Image (cartoon, rainbow, N blue to C red; front, side, top):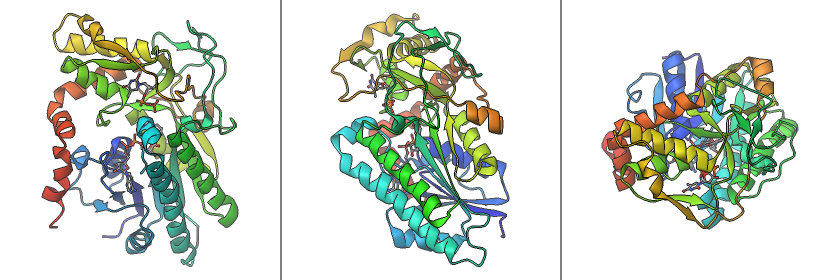
Length: 379
Ligand code: NAD
Ligand code: TYD
């Protein structure tokens, strides 16, 4: 079948990637979506069970650092768009093993860029109608100060803004904020962002970069704060809060990020950067209390009885104090708005993890890694 577009989504078996793949496969049945994922510990094909039989979906187990394979895939599928999410994504792992982060995030991105360049430059129409869209993080901008620990009334608002609606400082990351990464993770993402922009500036490749705040929602690997804590509360295990729990993150529901990616892929301006966030800042300790109350309520426990699980532990090395994204450019230029308020998003998320205990058990036992063999290996 001839498709209108042929798009590689890298990292589609991961948390955010699986939401992007699902959205594109269901919404654009005339597009061929090729999910390229190495299936590291973070890749889980069970995240895509509901769409894996769709005729416009193909899964390819491959490493983005494999140049020949990337080049072969572009030629074989006549790829005209790349949405690049594959990465090592967990800060704590990057502190223990920075080399893997440099390899996947920097060399992997460069490999994909060079493979796309070779393929697109070999075509008669060249770069016309092509797009390399790179998904990045707000962490590349470094850390903001927490000048107002009690919280200020936020000057901005979106539908995602929580009812508590605070800002913990007066500065925000804009698209002009100078890069100042602190962790090996954010340093590797910053480097990959620079390579993407360099390919635009040097070769004229059509590229877009977006920098998003912390995502939460279904299918997130339980090493990240929210799913880890939901699972620990369920099993009445300690909740390790780093430092004093005062660090601030700006939280966005993952499906709202996927919707932003769809909009920017289709309507974004070439060579631009867009920040994506919900103006929804939370101190870790406050978010943890909301999660505890929600889990307790949904499990029929006394609301708040699991507060005793909170355990303050040694702080993360180089722990960034505050992230807060100014996403007004995306709202102004492309009309994007988050769809869910934080309280609704958290309720939906906690409910999903509690209703999908089998998914969680498969992840925590390691069984999810057998899914590829059972479904794909002999195809
Ligand atoms: P994730 O860790 O859940 O998923 C990453 C996916 O990439 C996995 O499926 C993994 O198997 C795959 N992968 C890793 N190395 C690979 C390689 N060498 N070749 C092919 N595939 C490989 O990550 P996530 O949280 O979904 O993040 C996705 C992207 O979004 C990342 O680039 C991350 O930097 C960015 N981001 C994440 C957040 C967040 O809050 N999670 C916020 C902003 C930006
Ligand atoms: P995380 O989900 O790892 O995302 P990121 O580091 O990319 O922001 O962590 C979110 C915040 O929660 C961060 O400030 C670190 C903190 N945290 C804990 O206090 N305890 C934990 O066990 C984890 C995983 C994170």
